[in-house]
Amino acid sequence: MSFVGHIRDLAAARRELETRRLLVVGGAPDADRSAFLDAVAREVADEAGLPLYRFRVADAGERSGEAGRTPGEAADAVVEACRGVFVVHPCVVVVDGVPAGAADAVPTGTADGSLLAGLISAFAESESFLLVGSTDAREGASALPSDGCADGWALLTRAAVHCDRGDPRAAGPLLRRAVEAHQVAGDRRGEAWAVFLYGRMCRLRGRAEDARRLLHIARERFRAVGERPGEAWACGELARLATRSGAPDPDALAEARRLHERAGDRRGAAWAHLWWTVARADEPGFPWREEFANAQGRFHEVSDRLGTAWTLHHHALTLARTDGTDGVDGTAGTAGTGGTGGTGGTGGTGGTGERRREADRLFEGALTLFEEADCPHGRAWTMLEYALRSPAHRFLNGEWAAEIRHVFHGIGDEAGEAWVDLAEAGPTPDGEPPYELACRYPTALLDTLGWTEAGEPLIPRAARDTQPEPRPGFPRPGDRDRPDGSRAHVRLTLLDDVPVPDVPARIALQVVPGPGHPWSTAPLPPLTARATSLGHAEIDPAHGVPADGAEFRFTPHRPGSHRLRFTVEDPATGTVLQQVEAEIDVVPSDPGPHRPTAPAPRPSARRA
Image (cartoon, rainbow, N blue to C red; front, side, top):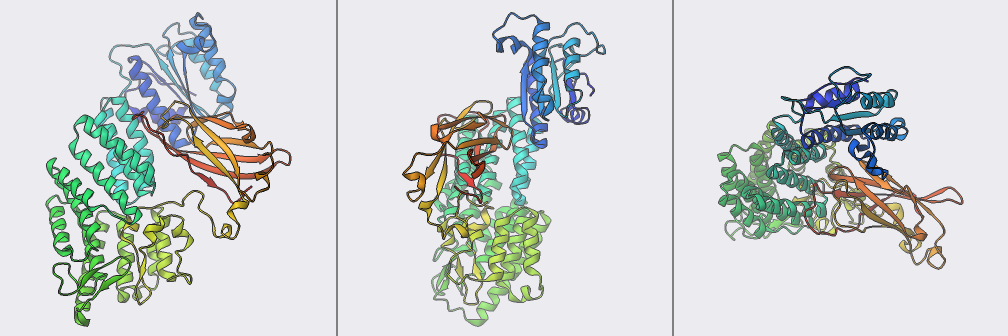
């Protein structure tokens, strides 16, 4: 273990802490120093997956009811508190408020000698990280880097790029750090953008309710700081949430476009125009050729290659799914929907061939732009649709499905891989969607899935808007043969308002037997429910008895999504009856009264 003196740069502090496991920060006002220590500690705890604990020397006496302790006695209390579990089990510990004073037993120029020496001794053999904050404010020293706000914006930019690439999982850690950076800097505008991007990330991952709540919060914060472009973006993302249910809301998208235009945001207006066009492209008689051309022109004006690529993709998709219709007049029939294809087309063989060649050219152009923009998500979807709509292209490459599946796999898009599996396997004998799709997408969206006469899927447009994970509790194929009433379920209920960092929230756990379960007519046995936090949070107590009304206190230490695991056991036999996981979203700060739905449990293969 070692120490450093005054820290000016967050990145340098982080490197020092990771290398030497001890960081001493002094020479700054109390609030700034504490915020700096908190930022370093949270970053290291997030990436290392360790719990985070905080101590203030000034509070050491108050915790035990002995506020009159001398500084030396308070120091001894802190050192003693840091021994034991914090030393034996790896964690990140922040000890702040160390007073300047006698420098005995440690080199000159550090914080309070006796306390620092005691802390070094307590942590000498541990794998934990120790951060110490000194109240010794010396002229010219600064704990926060001068460009702390700029760092927050840089993190937001990196997170937005990951979302644009179709890799939202990589955006999560960046957004958590960005929220903290903007909060430390007091930048309300930056914090609003961080919450917006977090909501957008939730939409991309198929977490519709979390996305809706965060985007509403972001919209209100944008309004509070007068950020009109941000308000327009939030309205557009909220409108896009409707596509997940298979029922787009073009009116809301048109309003978002008008908001962008009034705010002078040409790029935002181009995106809103594109999604409005996509939402209406399958309507009979809609002039989609003209509108896709208008959207493409808007993107060219702002030099947005990614927007141009998605415009070409959807334009090609519309061409490939219609039979001789162009949406401008009614002479050639009506444009088909994503589930049925065109109707009444009279384009003839020659017209169909020309449209197919035009669609091929657009797919190829989109593919080139997605590669230039480094967007594997768009690239994979374009490769898939191009292969399905152009048999000659597909047959040139016998490994077409494996190649596309590999691109989806590279960004962790298991839903995309499931669509490739469906395209390769063809329709199921019973006409039902495969389990890997049914457990991820709403039934209303999958109902719009269609098939061509050649057995090629007409994948709903909205499928490429999200990368949903399996829904918690969705029955597995083996469970469908087992009557639901014969099972016992674990029900989790969040009893308090929306959780915020460092504030306990109560969670009630119940075991609910079905009508066919033996426990439905007999008293519930004295089962044990064991609670475990899988992230940077505390949960207390560690055990509860559902028959007595098990209740736990969940205290998160950072915003974002937190996973909790509850294991229900029979103590008489030592048998694990059921294990469930729940995700709880923690917002950066309290946006106002709100009572979310209960966290949804994720059942394991074992059931009571």
